[in-house]
Image 1: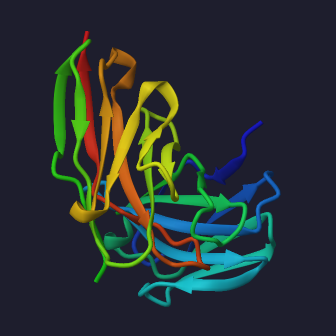
Image 2 (image 1 turned 45 degrees about the horizontal axis):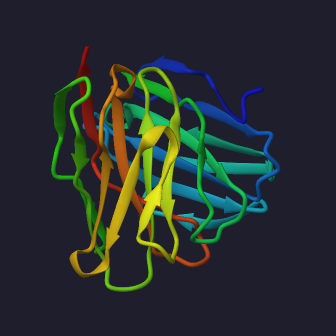
Length: 114
Length: 114
């Protein structure tokens, strides 16, 4: 059973389009995250939700809007896609939002904007 | 700003060679430290973590890491690598007590030749 699942795995789209990436975790964790991995493999946090409440919102363009309908799901919607949005987006979850709570990652969604 | 540096970007070793990957962080307060591994085509997995106590921590698959507070370092080691250790290795630090936010290094690509 996949603990943290993301869909789709690959997403190819044109500039200006709007797209969504979905994430679900079946671990019963309270906290979920979105990380972006750029072409140099550098991972940077974008958002975090704890029990459906936004607790981290890094400096991310407001074209990116996360939504957490319940604590098992955290979706990412991106409006007006730009070339620079091309990256691998990882969803993750952790039991709590405490510092010592290790993250469990999904397999990533590779987004290519043409 | 807090940051994590991994000095080796690409390491090539032969099987049975010893491994040490460097990781340094910049933050003067309490930290939790992690090493994650990403095998080809797979998601990031936790290799080991340091929270407190014995600065020498052991993880899965024979890996260990040593926290040296005076050097702000958390280097990863393995006495004898195998071909199956070929992967990306990421060092990460958590400094926030209530958000679970991880700051990642830029990763090290390890290639083990059979």
